[in-house]
Length: 567
Image 1 (tube, rainbow, N blue to C red):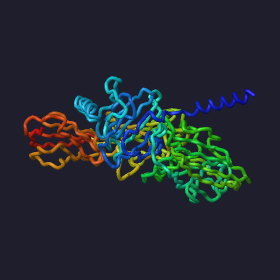
Image 2 (image 1 turned 120 degrees about the vertical axis):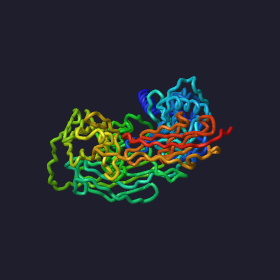
Image 3 (image 1 turned 180 degrees about the horizontal axis):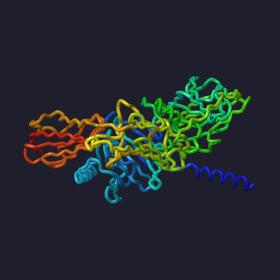
Image 4 (image 1 turned 30 degrees about the horizontal axis):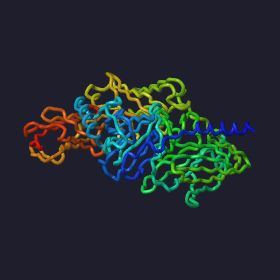
């Protein structure tokens, strides 16, 4: 009688170890307003999964941000893009919370950061790391204020919880943060894929997008399809929470075939290093062409995401002639609201289709090898494992444009693209740069490194590239004031800058010859200086700003203003 009990105890223990528990009452909400989300954890983003939750701030900036628990400020970063201004708090229970896109830090921290900025004479600080004794924090302390800095499209707070030791990011909702959500996910469309040359879907060896019928709340269905061989599916869907119209990501996706689970993944946690595999998780070619993301319910061989669980045949389904299959795809949000999609499939053999021989080119890629190819004045070099599989690469140079395969193919690593520029004069080289021509009307600047006779760049995107000249200097305009104006009551000084070529690379502003900190809102192209930063001596002052673009074109603006110090 002891053996069944021991087996039950072992099985229960196994489950308890395989499902991680998180403290539910340790962390408080970082804001005092109701938690309404503009973005969910693990959402599909460009080349990555969303690493936190985006909490709406009612369209406002400047709301108090509170420390979620006791700990200390372990890192601060001020950047123009990405998280913008961000603060990291390490907690004694093994987790670190992250607060990003903030407008400014709490007074003591803000003063310290500005001291660093003035010392370095740069807005961007890079990572500033601290020991426990520098900025100790208690739960509920005000640490910063909400904003819209960095790569943020509207005011909100990006909030993360990470395992301090492993740096794995964990869904903050797993720690008890409550959101109102009574709405199930919404299926938008279904795509079915033949996964080898002998597979058939409705007698064809090509993928199909199938229309979906909404039967009732949370229940969807498609018309029966016929198939043969190995096939897979992908779904386009979204989730909405209460009190918000945003289309957010789901929490989990699973697929059953005749009642047996073949596929499952969820976004409870993941690491930054694996986020790049999103381009194998989705139908990347479809996304690049149409900007619509289909999540596959099958796993590609080279996909190393840890979010999959107990897959059968990697979610790929082998359809046999004469048999009927009922597939059920289930999508859930974190609150457990569920939607399901039923897909009837009839196994039906088709007549063989004439198979065209595969295209070949002179440039064969062996994925596990380093390879380098040259055409005219263009060289491309691919490190080992840049590609996920072997292929024949399309590569040609036409009228100065390097055409490198197709941008619909995802890459695992960056490759190096080099142009020989020995035929250009030194003046011409100064204003040339490497551009991506995905949008030919608006060439996109690539970070171009220049040597005497070669220009090169690294990129993870295939496609068309060329050397383009930027002949225009940036534009600079004073806002709200004029030269030789009295501005005693003004609290800030604002300048608008822009560049239609390669974009703004750097700027340097001074008052009376001394560097001043101007914060750059790149979404509005506005630089702002706060007069509270430094006490001005006298009433007449000279403001000067020099702005440069990415090929070194510069523009300078100088203006005189008069200001009495207001206490």
